[in-house]
Length: 208
Image 1: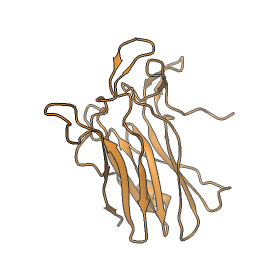
Image 2: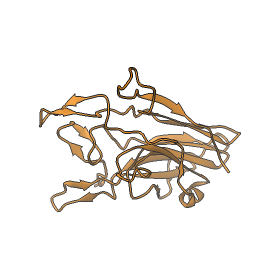
Image 3: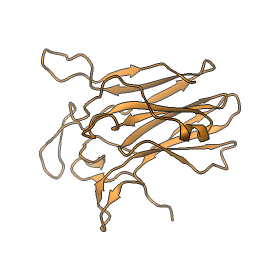
């Protein structure tokens, strides 16, 4: 019987969420193929290292990014874990000529453990990926607790930040420049003094 490492269900938001959040979260994988070798790479995030009480209720999430690789799609290596003591979610993976990059949202750079940034790990194979340091991609932390309000299914109260636009992606070609894409809330406001817009960002990251 497989162990369920998915994130805890939030009855008010009617979806899996991180601690203190209302936006949906999941463990859906991201798959990439190295076109030079046909080697496959898969990455996902789950809550296997989260804290739960004796009844199985979530005390604090600790999402981690996991990565595995296969030469043929049948035999897969034991996954390695990337991330920090804060939540890491929604990873994307890309590979070329043995080089691998994985980008993801992280709470690592907010002292309060709420705000989101995008970070990346890169390496020559997943062994080097495991030993690589987390590199921050974003230059400003985004607050996920704004915009897209909903109504709690249990509390009936207004819920802030029920959606953050979880459409992350990552591409890399023969130039070995990784291009993570993501959404966050630090865009230009629609009106003076209003909440920032959700916008799409991308950044070129040179692999070393």
